[in-house]
Image (tube, rainbow, N blue to C red; front, side, top):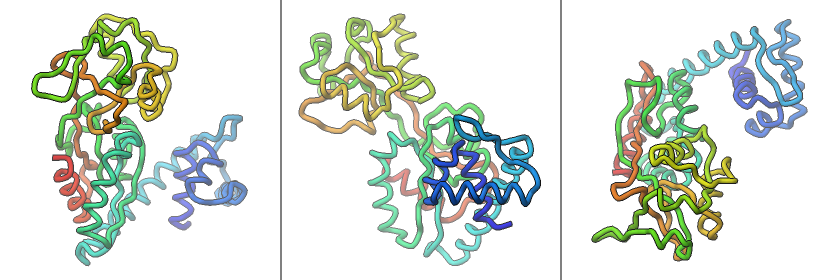
Amino acid sequence: MHLKELKYIVTLAEEGSISRAADKLYMAQSSLSQFLQQYESELGLPLFIRTSKGIRPTSAGTLFIDNARTILTHYRLVQNELWDMAGLHGGSVILGISSFRGRYMLPKILTSFYEKYPGIRVDIVEQNSMALEDRLIEGSIDLAIVALPLTRLTHEVEFIKKDEIFIVANRNHPVMEFAHKRENSPYYWVDLKDTTSFEYILSDYDTILGSNSRRQFEKAGIKPIAYNTNITADLGVAMARAGLGLAFTYHSCAQDYPDTLYLSIGEKGVFLELALAHPYSTYQSKAALALGKVIRESLS
């Protein structure tokens, strides 16, 4: 049994598809499929059930995958301790962050980190905060930038900043008739109740942005006009910039465009809290601690 083989099995379980797992592992689909058939043959038990929509673990597969994750996690922790003995001259850190937020935050963070620690590699895991919480609990990542509140992880969570949720609008959108200029500020705000006649472009329910925006509609007691309700945040912003509706984004992801304005939700605005989270009771490498420090400095 090799660590590489365990990684293949865990990746297959995470992706739920041989083709997607092969893409992630930079392998040919036929090679990965052949590996799985041979591995299951040697074990004498099937690890996955093949379906028309992909693969899912058998009961034996679930047991095997759980133990494989534990072995890989312990190996990584031992690696971290060995790298620490050599100082901050080498090693790696696994950082979790949402794809949308990471696109805007990570370039600055990683540039600063690599200037200080050129020998350390940062591996990025892109998932939403709910999925990253699971990764932290199982110990498969070293730290993550997540949105609060988390549901199960209560320790090892450090608040780093507030991030405002904005409505994105084209400058010529009719919603601007209802927008109010903030005093001594370039920003505007709008009452959600004044936007009921305009179409919204919404992210999916299982995203932090999607669930938060829907919660604001519920608080305001209104039902938005929305035909596109499963749109990625990036595409929603692009559509709103083109005047095709109103979308939501974060202050940390808001970029300056001559055709775009960002509106606060209500006069006081709506905020969520971002935090830096570590796994429960696992060894925190010097590299992970150093990356955490750079993240704090960059987001302060």
